[in-house]
Image (cartoon, rainbow, N blue to C red; front, side, top):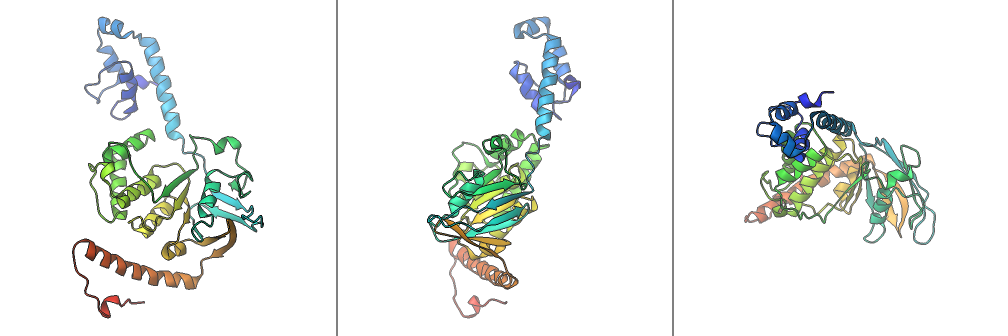
Amino acid sequence: MNAERLNINEHPYIADFLEGFGLRIEDKDTTAEEIFNALTEQELEDLGLEQESFFASLNEYVKDIEELSRDEGFRVDSITLIGGHDKSGTPEDVNLTINKGEIICIVGPTGSGKSRLLADIEWLADSDTPTGRGILVNGEKPDKSLRFSLEHKLVAQLSQNMNFVMDLTAEEFVQMHAESRLVENPAEKTAYIIEKANELAGETFTPDTPVTSLSGGQSRALMIADTAFLSLSPVVLIDEIENAGIDRKKAMDLLVQEEKIVLMATHDPILALMGSKRIVIRNGGIAEVIETTDEELESLTYLRKLDDLLLEMRNTLRTGGKLKPSKESFSIDI
């Protein structure tokens, strides 16, 4: 490899290497070799640079970066949930395999143990959590090093409580994440993610909107789009986003299109019926796994129309309008 002859515009990470040596880059449509050769002997001496060692370091750096960019993360085609026990010690009769592109919902009263189940999955439990559950990856017990790996984090988690503390615009935030993932054309990817986020959010925002100014719904829409298109984590855990102020169906479609395994704790009937199965939690344990029936899917169509009607009324009130309740205004075609 002759990294010194690579165009900096096409390989922008080379700029970081050069700037680390105190070299100024006035024209990115150039190469490291051209920048180095333009230096005077005095400048080389001041910077402590020698051609052979400098280019050797650059080639090693580019080699490492390109290996990192080819890393697509640990491939996960399925996870399997092996039952443990509930709070009373009653065994869970569960052996559930969830494949990529599948949505599984988790239902149960508040405090029943839905979040505990999500935590068991996030920690890749190995019969060593309070529930005694186990999690298999691709049908096998995962290596212990995978449980604590930062490079191959298996799970991304989204919840209702999501706040930004950085003083960045939405564009700067996403582009920084894109550049850290070494994606090609980070600016183009960033624009696409913001466009998709705006399709989920109730109210749109611009690329130059500070992330600290985003509403709760806009923040969650941005993070869902970011997770779908930038995160290498193959499993997405979602904890009660029904009140998040986003288009829930589009959000789920986005994650499934990117072949994520989605597990979602919810009280929302529309979300609960989006999954192919739903796990019922009682007394801290998995009481039942129910497959979504064709009759329930017919109900889902009705519920979505009802939800659209409520959303329309909500938007009317929010924008200062007045409702004109009548028998016709509450009618829904089934």
